Image 1 (spheres, rainbow, N blue to C red):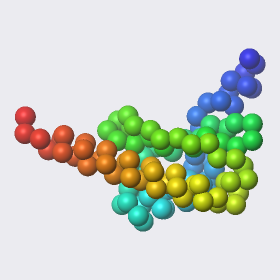
Image 2 (cartoon, rainbow, N blue to C red):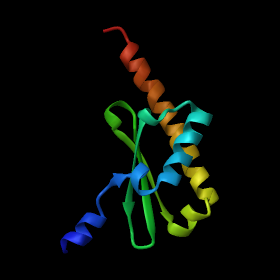
Image 3 (tube, rainbow, N blue to C red):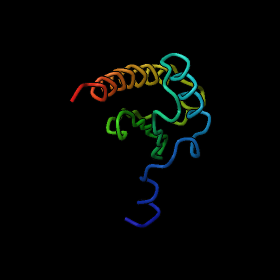
Length: 107
């Protein structure tokens, strides 16, 4: 593998690589789940005909959800993006609540 192939498979910040998708995801998470931009880390990995969107969340960003989207799906804001946002929002909210109760538990 040459260095160009290796670097294309590395995670990159979604807000740099796919700013429109990043804005859609973060706006929808904040609007529907009260999950803010600083509660998640959004990354993207470029594939041959699209991107894998990766969202990290939870304490130390230990949890993640990811899904592949074609360039066409991203361009036309395909409904599968909304489904992914809903899946991430539900999982993130559940993890954040569990993390909160772990933190507040008497020692």
